[in-house]
Amino acid sequence: MDPVTPLRFRRLLLTGAAGNLGRELRPRLRAYCDMLRLSHRSDFGPAGEGEEVMLAALEDPQAMLALLQDVDAVVHMGGVSTEQPWAPILAGNIVGMVNLYEAARKNKVKRVVFASSNHVTGFYRQDQVISPRDPVRPDGYYGLSKAFGENLAQLYWDRHGLETVSLRIGSSFTEPKDRRMLATWMSYDDTERLIVAALTAPIVGHTVIYGMSDNKTTWWDNTGARHIGYRPQDSSERFRAAVEARQPTIDGTDPAAIHQGGAFVRQGHYD
Image (tube, rainbow, N blue to C red):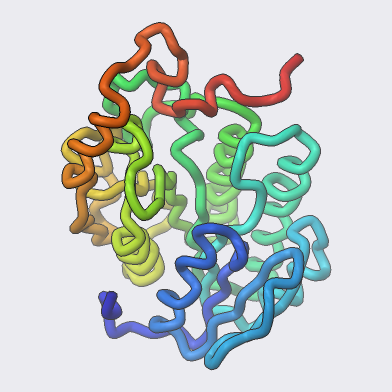
């Protein structure tokens, strides 16, 4: 996709660069900056043209302080991205998030685009339409950690003036995998549009917005975040016939079919 804005950054940082979405964003974000700094906790290969690689563990405060040096803005995709036991979530998504924001504050970084998650509100039902103004209802430790991240972003905006757009990402894949994803799906092109809008909107404070394409079925109302200028251009509707053929019926007694968080509402380690 051609760049959606002529605005450029001197240096952008992409954390979690070796993750599923990080790998997709890497070539796309390169078009919006003079230098793209890529980070992950373990080796993921050499830097390309216009890139630099810095390995860093989120839970290491000194490594994070160095990682954020000379950075204009951060696209934070790093951390644990699925439901896991508490210890890794604590390290990556709680301690790591504090380290990232402290490093951003000390290095005078202007803005963070934070990969939050729809699982912050995963225990709302699929027959409800909610907005970022509704109370959080996490569907597990992962969703809980993302709710913490949003609250931390709010604190750093209120206390330090560090702007954040928290993206409650739905399901960013090549195509929807099931009927739930007909509501939550976001194309890679729309993901790029959302992140670039979050990076380039003039004033955002701390804005929370759901990440989804222009789907016919939706549970999320982004009206309150229209000021960032995100207008999705893709839709899951072209996949509907194939998805419904693969999944013609829904078990109305299954918590994963009832709640917006899907299978996350029955995953986890709570014995």
